[in-house]
Length: 71
Image (cartoon, rainbow, N blue to C red):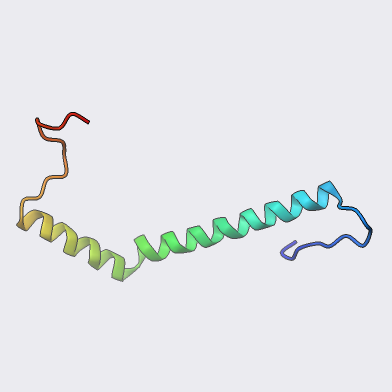
Protein backbone atom coordinates (compact mmCIF):
# COMPACT_ATOMS: atom_id res chain seq x y z
CA UNK A 1 0.00 0.00 0.00
CA UNK A 2 2.37 2.64 -1.18
CA UNK A 3 -0.33 5.04 -2.35
CA UNK A 4 -2.87 6.96 -0.31
CA UNK A 5 -6.24 5.24 -0.24
CA UNK A 6 -9.26 7.45 -0.85
CA UNK A 7 -12.70 6.63 0.49
CA UNK A 8 -15.56 6.72 -2.02
CA UNK A 9 -18.14 7.68 0.60
CA UNK A 10 -18.85 10.92 2.40
CA UNK A 11 -17.05 10.16 5.66
CA UNK A 12 -13.62 8.87 6.49
CA UNK A 13 -12.78 5.33 7.46
CA UNK A 14 -10.59 5.33 10.61
CA UNK A 15 -8.79 2.15 9.52
CA UNK A 16 -7.88 3.66 6.15
CA UNK A 17 -6.79 6.91 7.81
CA UNK A 18 -4.48 4.94 10.12
CA UNK A 19 -2.98 3.08 7.15
CA UNK A 20 -2.39 6.39 5.38
CA UNK A 21 -0.67 7.87 8.47
CA UNK A 22 1.54 4.79 8.80
CA UNK A 23 2.49 5.00 5.11
CA UNK A 24 3.53 8.61 5.62
CA UNK A 25 5.57 7.68 8.67
CA UNK A 26 7.26 4.87 6.79
CA UNK A 27 8.19 7.26 3.97
CA UNK A 28 9.71 9.73 6.43
CA UNK A 29 11.68 6.96 8.10
CA UNK A 30 13.00 5.80 4.73
CA UNK A 31 13.96 9.37 3.85
CA UNK A 32 15.75 9.80 7.18
CA UNK A 33 17.57 6.51 6.73
CA UNK A 34 18.68 7.57 3.25
CA UNK A 35 19.95 10.93 4.55
CA UNK A 36 21.76 9.21 7.41
CA UNK A 37 23.39 6.82 4.95
CA UNK A 38 24.52 9.72 2.76
CA UNK A 39 25.80 11.72 5.72
CA UNK A 40 27.67 8.98 7.57
CA UNK A 41 28.39 6.10 5.20
CA UNK A 42 29.60 7.68 1.98
CA UNK A 43 33.22 8.11 0.96
CA UNK A 44 32.82 11.89 1.05
CA UNK A 45 31.52 11.75 4.63
CA UNK A 46 34.40 9.49 5.62
CA UNK A 47 36.89 11.97 4.16
CA UNK A 48 35.24 14.85 6.03
CA UNK A 49 35.43 12.89 9.32
CA UNK A 50 39.10 12.17 8.66
CA UNK A 51 39.82 15.86 7.98
CA UNK A 52 37.99 16.86 11.18
CA UNK A 53 39.89 14.28 13.21
CA UNK A 54 43.20 15.50 11.79
CA UNK A 55 42.37 19.11 12.69
CA UNK A 56 41.38 18.08 16.23
CA UNK A 57 44.66 16.18 16.65
CA UNK A 58 46.81 18.90 15.07
CA UNK A 59 45.40 21.68 17.21
CA UNK A 60 44.89 19.55 20.35
CA UNK A 61 41.21 20.46 20.55
CA UNK A 62 39.38 18.98 23.54
CA UNK A 63 35.58 19.09 23.61
CA UNK A 64 35.41 17.70 27.15
CA UNK A 65 34.38 19.69 30.20
CA UNK A 66 37.04 21.70 31.93
CA UNK A 67 37.29 22.34 35.65
CA UNK A 68 35.74 25.80 35.26
CA UNK A 69 32.54 24.47 33.65
CA UNK A 70 29.55 24.27 35.96
CA UNK A 71 26.93 23.02 33.48
